[in-house]
Image (cartoon, rainbow, N blue to C red; front, top):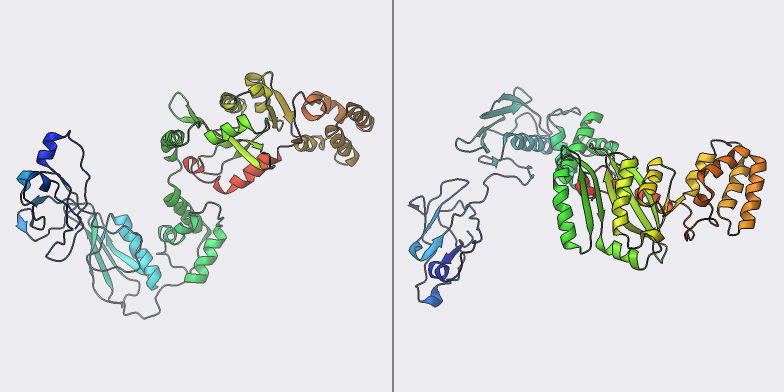
Length: 480
């Protein structure tokens, strides 16, 4: 067992009291206890060293009674301040259930049944439950002439379960007794097989892949519903519950600000203290944007696909190497005027010179309302590609109209823009009126009040949403 933790009594008198580290005593089936050598802190003060191998447990020397909490009495304890040492958990919880043996312990009945189902899958033997209640669990082989019996029960003074007996080996054959519709393979068992594959969020595991893998490796026809439940439970075991994740987000934001100087985070809740909005921007990204990055920001929103739903708001830029530079991220329940106004307010607070910033987005009404409320004097440009898609609704069979629109939007001179717009008006007056209503300064490069450089679309924001596609199904804290 590890060396028990203790401190010198005289040392405690001279120094302020401090909390000692708890040590865990690991249970050994042998009659003797192997104790590592412990350096005696009081030897320098003139006290004789104590042999820590003379250990008594509950008054009986060199014996052990299984318990989740054990009191250790050390010879010469009058010289030391003794603390309570908790023993290591006695039940198995490492999810390796390839073998089940007599005396094996589990933390609850659910884990016991998962272990038995996993073992049945590995050994290819099906079983049926004969008796199951809050204190006993008895299973027999599916074949009635087989002598295999499994018995387990709940401990009297605890909550863990242990295997009482496994009476014999299977006598129904060596090749197993389950068919392709092995019903004992529950979604909890399949979750154990595929949980490790979900550690990488970028790895897209489809339900069809789970069904094919179970058929090829184990010869089991898995239904679509069971494959869906298995995938859902595997994600839950790796990343946690989506609803409980909202409770851990404030703690994560706190540690994010503490570990990254200059980081800005904020959470907005409603009157019932329920999550409403969230914002995060790393300090390094803020400093880089305020010093060397071109002041053109592309914003967009993408819908989350977890059980809690919601939207992810993204604000990105371009660095000197024309690479995507993430600036800020936000979480909201819906994409509306209130959510965009709140997000733009937080973005405004982290920007050093907001009046010099150019915002590029699609024609969502919430963004326009947020710009008028937060950045009334700021420049707002419309994505040329999204505007072209809106114009196609008026002229689906006239390709020349979109061609003239793109040439006018990307024109560098006023004379060229006026000529192309005049040609567009003669070809399709309705499209011309639509562009005038949108605002010439919002889509024309030559009329923009700020430097837009060559960022005429929100492609970098769409690319960021594409990169985050794999994590959209995760809980909110895992996404952050």
